[in-house]
Length: 65
View: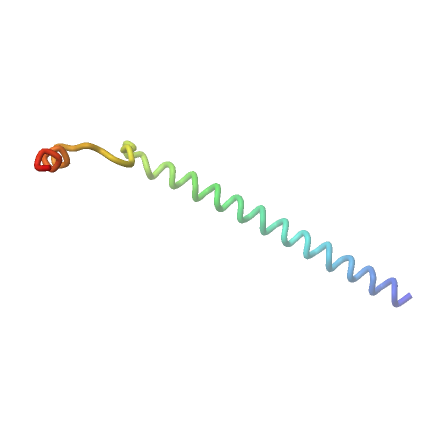
């Protein structure tokens, strides 16, 4: 009988570990979603194009070559 009790406690331990991991994943996912939504609302500035832009300063430099 003591063997069954040990097996039940081991099973319960594994179930609890699984539930804890699942709960941690849910909490991590919700905090990431909250952070992403607040970041989107804060960055309402007009988006500028990234990369090469030919400005007057660059044109002046090309004219000196």
